[in-house]
Every structure is written in C-alpha cells, then in structure tokens.
Amino acid sequence: MRKSRLEKVFSNNYLKLYQLAFDEKGKFFSEIERVSDIFGIKKFDFNPIDPGKFRKGENFKNIIKFGNNQLKKFFNKISNKKKIKFFEEINKSRERLKLGREWNETIIRVVLSGVFYPPLFAVYYEDDPNDDVIRFEINRNTTKFDLDLAWENSAGIRKKMFGKEKAFYATKKTINNLNMNIEAIIKKHLKSNKNEKISDKQIVIEIFENAKDDSEKADKKRVNRLRTNRHRQKKKLN
Image 1 (spheres, rainbow, N blue to C red):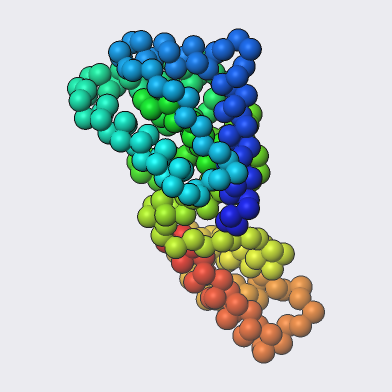
Image 2: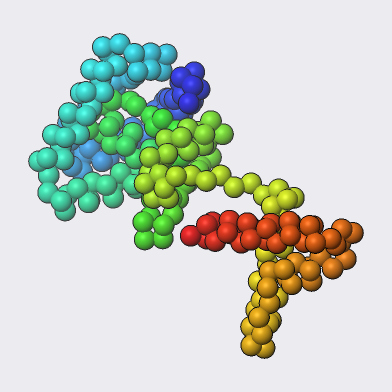
C-alpha cells in the first residue's frame, strides 16, 4: 500500500473522530466519561495526533508509547471478570455511537490515556478457524481505500489459514474445460451403473461426435485435454 493512500485513509478516519468528538450533543465524550466513571479511571487531557504527521517524529512516538503504557497498567491491575465487564461497556459505547467494531481500540485508548488515534481503516475483520473463514465487516464510513488496506493488512492471517493464495478467474476456455470434465464424469457414472466401463477415448468420441474434425489426431488431443482438465480439477478440490 502506498504511503500516500495509507495517510489518506488515516486522515479520513481522523476527520470522523474529530466530528464525533466535537458533535454538538457531546455524545462521544459523554460515553468516555460514562465508562471512566464506572471503572474509576482518571480523566485524561485530550491528546490528539496530527494526521499530517502520521507516524512521524518523536511527538507521535511519545503519544503512542504513553497510550500503550496506560493500557498495560490498567489491564495488569484488574481481574479477568472486570476486563470482561470493561469490554462490554466499550461495546455499548461503540454501538451507541454507531461505529464499527474496529473503533473499539480507539475508544479504549481515549478512555485510558486521552490519546486520540483512529483505526487505520474503517473495516473490522476476524478469523474463525472453526468455519475456516475470515469475516470482514464494513459500515457507513467504509471506503474502497479502507477495504484495500484491510485486505492487504490481513495477508498474514489469510496465508496462515488458507496457505498460498491462488487467484481464480473463470474464462470462456475454463468454462468449456469444466463442462467437458462434467460430461465425462456423467458418462463414466452412467456406464458404472450398468457395470460397464468406458475409456477416455470413447468419452471424447461421444462428447465431440458432431465436431468438424473427427480425425484420430484431433481425438488424441481431446483425450489429452480431458486428462489435463481432470488433473487440474482434482488439484483445485484438494
């Protein structure tokens, strides 16, 4: 992902965060205060990160470091039961603000440190090893740039779950080869039901009985094509 595109997505989400923070109704800070009061968390000063200096300079590093330290301190001193309750309240606040789940960390950072740091992209994704899937969630703030960045960012988890990616785009030739393979499977199945056998050459002759070129040479090429298709289909299924 090009740096300029990354900064553009970050800036868009930063703008959304500012709009939330300075909304006339004050919903955002009301939710921050609500969670802080429940858990007796010290109120921090608003600590913004300049989107124009994204990932640049000591100030950025220090703000992020401070935010991370505050998170560690808080979670190290509370029980697991209290952690569950904390995340439940964070989820409530996020839902009231009509934000996607990718904003949970942002709300947590503001509550625990005052650090204003929006998600890099307005997409939430999580893996589900039991179903062997990765689920992506988009919301009203999601742009194509967000999706592109989320897709690239999930490369590691996709590789871990699915192995090396194999892009597959069907063409007219692909469809024809697939149809040929299906016809061959059907003919073999019909013969096996009658306890009969049929060779690949016989299958090809039946499939291409109306072909203009019915020479021995053409049939030999078709047999090779059928076997190649069958091998490729087996590999895809495995």
